[in-house]
Image 1 (tube, one colour):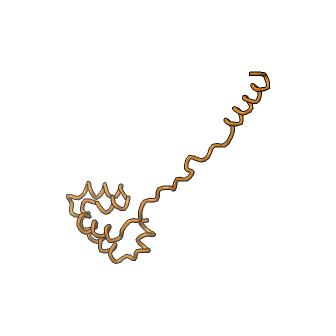
Image 2: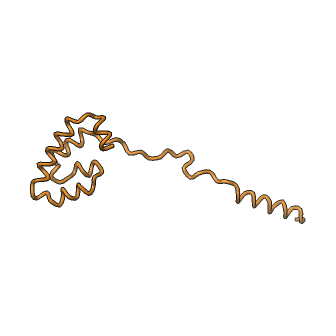
Image 3: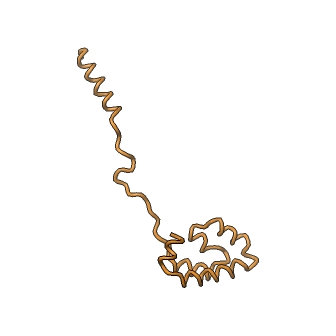
Length: 100
């Protein structure tokens, strides 16, 4: 291996290490969660609203935990029932806009 070969090899190695690499997400589509169902949220609120299940379903975990802590007071059950009725009468577009 002569001096010219070493220079060419060093140049090739430098070019290989400085070449831009493709992005890590090349060819991968980003994950988008499916939209939430208005009817499912309404049924969960009506039947299991006292435990806050509908809030967990709608990714509102803080409020869901609040419902779960106070389920014994029956107030979350009443509020959940009312929310279920509201969800039933809400349009699909309004529900999707508010809860994604």
